[in-house]
Amino acid sequence: MSDANTSAAGFPPAFTFEPNAAPAAPDARASLIEDPGFGRVFTDHMATIRYSEARGWHDARIVARGPLSFDPATAVLHYAQEIFEGLKAYRLDDGGIALFRPEQNARRFRDSARRMAMAELPEELFLQSCRELVLRERDWIPGGEGGALYLRPFMVASEVFLGVKPASEYLYAVLASSVGAYWKGGARAVSLWVSHDYTRAGAGGTGAAKCGGNYAASLVAQAEAVRRGCDQVVFLDAVERRWIEELGGMNIFFVMADGSLVTPALTGTILPGITRASIIQLARDEGLTVREEAYSIDQWRSDAESGALAESFACGTAAVVTPIGKVAGPDYGFRIGDGGTGPVTARILARLSAIQRGRAPDPHGWLTRIA
Ligand code: PLP
Ligand code: COI
Image 1 (cartoon, protein in one colour):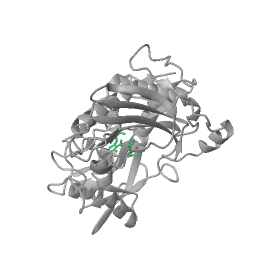
Image 2 (cartoon, protein in one colour):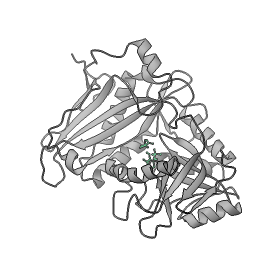
Image 3 (cartoon, rainbow, N blue to C red):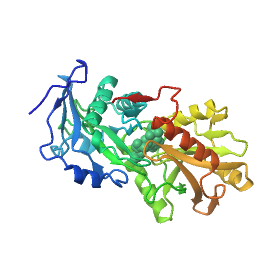
Image 4 (tube, rainbow, N blue to C red):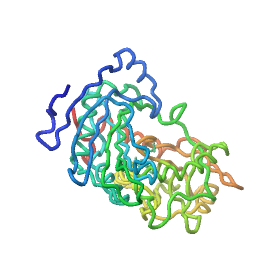
């Protein structure tokens, strides 16, 4: 059973569609997406494309979501040649559907592939795979505040070979997941544990790539954060263990009492977040000063204690804009502002969300309307 791709205007390769023979019934779907949380509710289909050195990109499909089967000697299972992306599709008030800056994810996916010596998926094919999947799965976009369809494009080295070298075959796929709030219990200020023992990335490493290995390396520190009673870990630089880098899955901003913003510069060890870039732009549009520069843990603590720092927040596609209420390390702890959501954080969250949901003018053309 397959029908030809109809919306791709002839861009090769066309996505064949093999419908899920047992899709979720409408009432089951409705109850699944009522309060989906993050990353547990998946739609009926996924997009897949294969790559081989001999054939290039081929075999583009939308198929029933289901297990992938791999030979035990498949390269990714041993050497972790894997990358991924995260972006959201929003339902607009007029019933349309839009993706937020998907071309930025397409470009970062290529950048990540290059760093991991993987085949580079053409950006138009990345965009087409997202578009095709969302159009098939539009009924899975939850209503309600914070509801969206989270897309998870990823790629793995699928060559069956135990030699240590860049693979010659890859599988690219896109999953779609109905999501609501990222944090259990909804939006609230989170607490951070500053890891002085573990780092996430070093100069020349893979910190700026969105590869699974970065997240694997962060988990022991994240687990420690939870053990210490905190929500998330924040990493320091690998050389001096002084400069704040980012969280396990979010960038970080500091709001000074004078209204200016500071965020760590992109020096190659942190992920160049698309939410980060958007917030810098929105803040500058408002006339705020934004400095991309190193900011140390000691400075953060003394600025929070003196009142020179008013707010701090974390940001990313999944968590959007999340206020930081408390910070703790091995022998210290401090509160940010009154420990809740500050006014600048609240305003940036509101402005960004309004653009993402088509409720405010989109001066930079960040929304890509697909329906
Ligand atoms: N930093 C890390 C390590 C991430 O995993 C993410 C999430 O994607 C971000 C930052 C934020 O990036 P973006 O705003 O593009 O989602
Ligand atoms: C995202 O925000 O899209 C992320 O990838 C963060 C996390 C879920 C890994």
